[in-house]
Length: 84
Ligand SMILES: [Zn+2]
Image 1 (tube, rainbow, N blue to C red):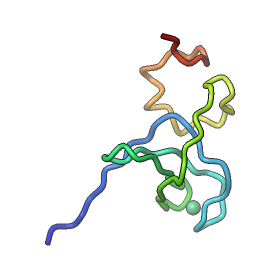
Image 2 (cartoon, rainbow, N blue to C red):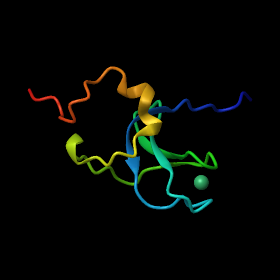
Image 3 (tube, protein in one colour):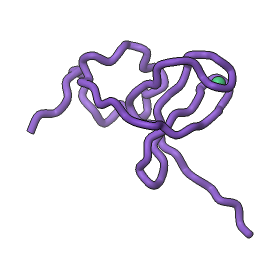
Image 4 (cartoon, rainbow, N blue to C red):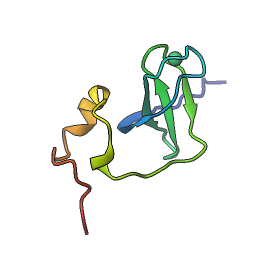
């Protein structure tokens, strides 16, 4: 039996609240291959799935975005969500 491997991608966002494993508030947002969203602790590496997602305007996002450098390269730094 081969190992079941899930590849998760970091996307823009943050997960409020402390990590359930190490207690630090350093959780980043990840997306799984089935497009479900979850979180990854940047401190201890724990990964979990989100029970629900609260979609917010980009301008309201706190400035704790140091872990989203890679995914932010393709988006303009205007702080605004794209409008249709
Ligand atoms: Zn942790």
